[in-house]
Length: 221
Image 1 (cartoon, rainbow, N blue to C red):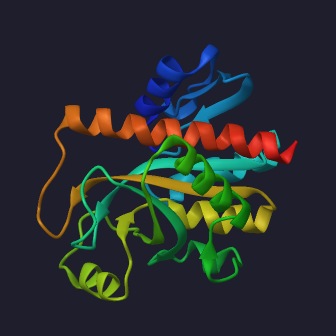
Image 2: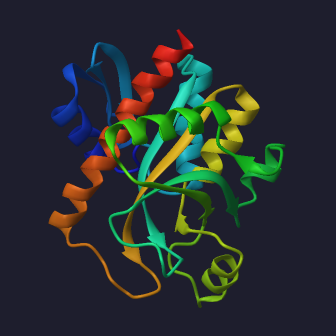
């Protein structure tokens, strides 16, 4: 589950075989195809917790989806974390009231089994990943750096906008969840990846997400 519908299409076109577009309702593209002999779907979430929450809930309740892996981008909060590096979110903190409103438990965490699977797949593929907490913000343009300073001081690795919704909803609905993120903007140094660098770097993370989905499906079977 990427945020951007165009990235969902990119995943289908580059990585899937025998794929078909299964939805374009509200411009939110979804595709189903084969990856390494496993049938899986790619569905965009849109940007932010309210949008993601709709699609996550509908996928689980209406289509019996049992595992959702977010593949996204994030901004770096820690000075020793570099652009292009991949963060696996063990848990999320948020300024959104959605988790509390739907009765989600705290802390808001990834499915332990999925963390084990992605660590194993990353090791097998020789991909370095950093595990830790991410901040899922409801605000893209903050008025000041107070949130960044506070969360960075508490060890939060990065900021994005959807992981808390994914983890909270999946926990309530009995689905498995994982969020894998590429660092594309450094909020400490001010560095940013170019559009070309972003796409090349993100592809490694996308493939890690796909291989994790396959490994999770295999181990569950």
